Image (cartoon, rainbow, N blue to C red; front, side):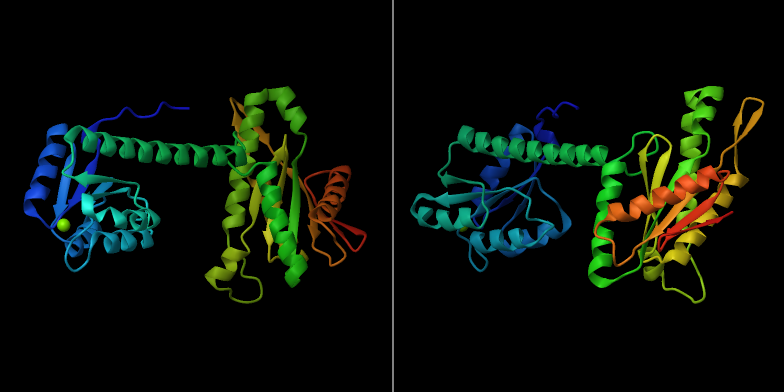
Length: 335
Ligand SMILES: [Mg+2]
């Protein structure tokens, strides 16, 4: 993991809000001298306007101001998703401390009391900027880890865990609302032979080629029988995941058996039309596909996976480069 960024005041913009010009000037001078970027507002209203155009990293906010006071500004900023993450430090007079509980409840991170001591003010500003930045970096690292944990490294598509998670959600929707739902189990034919003959690099290329072709096929919108809206078409878009080795699954939400069969055939044919060039050799790569669709007797997605697996096995046994369907305890093979 990369190191946290070192602290540099020039990287930060601070908005200072105070209705008394003298206070404002002093604060700006102190921050400027330390190297921070600054911007300012003379009133709550002006602060809210400023925040529409700029995105400061921290706000020093005077508590007592005419019209819109600091607490009201704070409340508005915390209600707005665009500004709610900006840390707010209140500037208060010593006789205003009874408002501080409310300020913290509204989301303020800290306060300084007038007349403030410069080192203390700067220390608090720096602490909260560092905290915020560390928090942001941790959040980004966490998002990145989540992405990595859900992705197959070689092909960039969802891995077994994440495609099954998606599939289970779709399965539950089908159970509850009786939506059609299908899945394809796909296996690259004679993958071991490809690996043994040409090496693992070519095997990896074969996997990537298969993924690209499949994703292309899944993106094409089906216009079967009637025109579909774009939203309908998108909701039917298939999702490809790698289960491991040369085995893949496609989750097809809102797709019945016929639609799934058409998608499988289109994919199988597309694979036969492309080849992999290895030096002076042309390598053909084909796939076998097992199709299963949701049945109201199914208790869990595994029941569908088992049928798709049986169909895939039959497609392999009957010569490969085939699509097979397992439905109502019957097997249908087709080319
Ligand atoms: Mg004031």
